[in-house]
Amino acid sequence: MITISRRRFLALAGGVLATGCTAAREADIVVPSPNDFGTSPTTTSTVPGVVTSVSSTEPAPFGNNVLVLVELRGGNDAINTLPPLTGAYRDLRPTIALPETDLVMSEHFGPHGLHPSLAPLVDLADAGRLATLAGIGFEDPDRSHFVSLDRWARADRMDDGLGWLGRWIDTLPDELPSLGATALGGSGDVLLGAKAPGTVIDGVDAFAFPTLLSNGSMRALGDSPADSSHGSNDPMLAAARRAFVDSVGATEEFDPIADAVRSRVPEREPGDLGPALGAFTTGLAVAAEMILGDVGTRVVSISVNGFDTHSDQLAQHADLLSDLARGLTQFWATLDEVGAADGVLVATTSEFGRRVAENASNGCDHGAAGVSFVMGNSIVPGLSGALDTADLLDGDLRPLIDPRVLMTACLDWLGADVEQIIGQRHDDVPIIA
Image 1 (cartoon, rainbow, N blue to C red):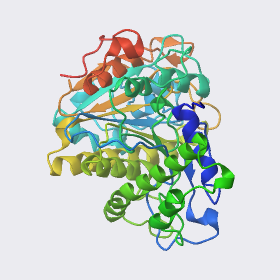
Image 2 (image 1 turned 135 degrees about the vertical axis):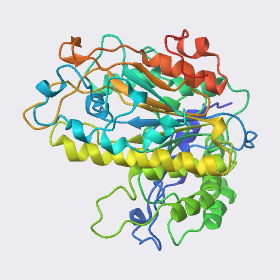
Image 3 (image 1 turned 180 degrees about the vertical axis):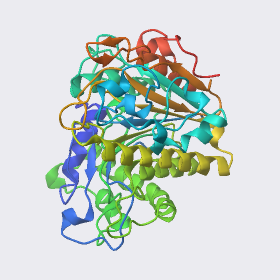
């Protein structure tokens, strides 16, 4: 008897999708955009293109706590996100330090200002729904994107290739439904488990099959009996066909979510460089519709690139943070409107911060400690930690808060066994009230 693992089973399904879908990773099936098939889409979608792995279990009851991770990939500049009001900040950044008159001042951020693009977050802070972790980062920091991203994804268990949320998914008694654990933006490492990799949505256009191929016709391809000459009793072929049918089902399930997001996120006007269709705004709109769609969503991660600001940082960073603030506030307003916010926790992460001193290209290079924001109705609000420019670690902000403090809070929110998943609890900073 031939046996295959779920990860191998999902990879094999890529072969069935030879007319357009390819296996991008060992555990994922890629559904390409319409343009990959030589046809033009009939409408412009604001929903990312999809890489999915699915299951056929029923959704978990609505009301289970949901975690939304927002990843600022590339290394967000913490010190311009939350500029210190004292110390060497302006001396070390003669060009890219933000003018003090531009900063948003609020008691919620202690001896720091707030980047003006993040001004909408002050209302959340005033309502007691925002916590700020300043100086978050691993001890003995590494300035490599790859190493630092792995440390965050694996909870610093570098001998274990699984993501810390993937390990949690593995402990669940039943498989999550197809949209139960979803990564938006192309990075699903934190969701990678031994049993299932989660669903990964990658791109910006097509969570759908090509215009000329309906969901029904694609499902029929999977339902058609195998030709005896190709081995109708082949378990690998049967597994691949099942994954194909499940993938079609996931696409069908997402259709109303995509339609709802299109109605909420306006089209970008020609020449408009603003954040109307920014990746944070769109990704968080998708997350909100998934949560409200009662499809069994428990975890969503949203990854947005662009924070590797080695040069000409000011405008790029301002645009990204503006999009982040707009996305977070619209997300929360959407949930609040229907009374669904109590069961949701949102946390932002970035693999590292940036060096305190600017470089010769009006940017700053890879650093150490960063800043994370946590949103929720059941959190301990206010500032923990600090960005201290008077006590640097080789020119970097010194890490004060271990990222596993944030992971402990997130796992508690999900009802997980923290010690089983990340090795031990880290309760240095209270986050969940």
